[in-house]
Image (cartoon, rainbow over all chains, first blue to last red; front, side, top):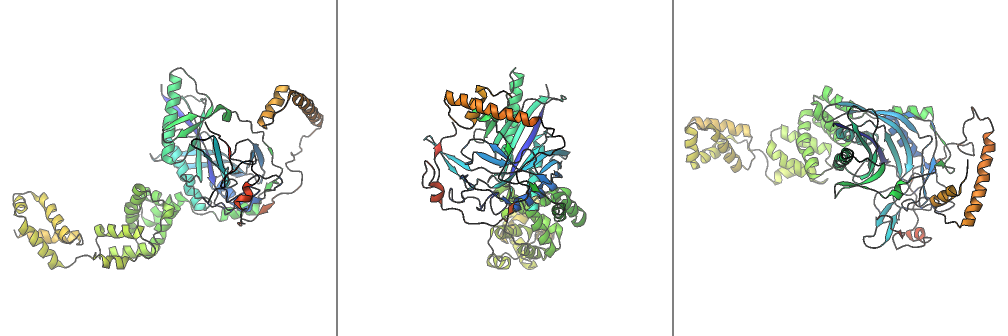
Length: 480
Length: 95
């Protein structure tokens, strides 16, 4: 039988405010355990939480960017549960009237399909603390630094059918929130976390199967593997006559498997009730109009502009525009260098290579556009060739602020050899020292030309213009 | 709504309360009285009345996003029944 996978996502995004959602403790990542804490975020009796206005702004702008209807009148509720990651024994969240609902996100997947994913709702809530479990003993050590960090939870409709749609969705959320400047969305650091609700059904069926919820997935690669594992598990279970149990399953990255979490943790009865400490929130028409007005240009619009105005190929434009940081480097460098094709070349070959192969994150790129543009000027003036350029670019890319392109080229003696007589001399020497290769050439093996070019470049330490070497070589071979 | 002994025990368990059979019986009586008062309130016609979400007629009590110093860790930890120099200590929560 052919099966169809049905998925819905719950994505938690930490908002990049300076302080926590209900108190003035810093939200800075890391820090010694329990040093970013006060009586409010550790749930001491008699304290009064007060909502951070920046949280409201960031949340509403996220809602608008995901095409949601905004509940201008919205409010908070208490979700009660006993677990030591939350010292109050309840989480302040939004259940009955979340601030945003009924949005939609348009996706363009890797295989080129256009898909629309519905957003059921988005609510504001507080993050929980981090629990460190002792390896051998029977104790757990809570660290409440993260407790009270503002989150939005984006609940999608069960509209996902393929893994690539999930990847495209998360990539788009990250890109959108980066452009808005409301979150850094680092999955590895936990500032963006996805729970995947997954069920399977016979293809063509319109009824939903029983779903499981997978938690603890902290990278796009892990999500791909978790979906592959869990869908296969459910299909095999059903095909062997079993049935799927509705439960929460933990993805174990090392074992590459999902595990049922303790049934006690599954028995949830949160006894929600209206939060008496936080008065309702009213978002005015003026605020909404203002947030719409300051909405930045997002990835699709930017990519379209890169294609129409700057002549980039669609695929390249999507990759560069997909990241606020790559797009900024591209645009600011091009503003000075005024050569989009050349800037694109170095970004798509070198920068992307460093990101894919060496794990460089776009937001961590330090390269200044001024320096990048200066480098491009040097390449275009023919002062270094492309091969040498790669070496210079790499040193510049990983170098610190004090890196000086001109000084580097001088110090390493990388300037191009455009002395025609030197190239002629070198080629003559290569020909004289390799009679065997000359014989091969004379017997019609013209492929051997590559050997001569290689030897010549090697002697010139790669600094000659390959086109010039080819031209001089052709002359020399003619004379043989 | 019928308040059974099972329901009282269930709510007690959710709230992490340990109760003797006498206390459970007492709670069952008191909770039944509270819930029957709700029935009384339900006799009122509330069509077209917006639910009250807060007892005061106020909205938007907000603060600016400005960092203030957190508490000294020893002060945060000192009320806990058990703690180390850095963290609270609780019974292990995973298998």
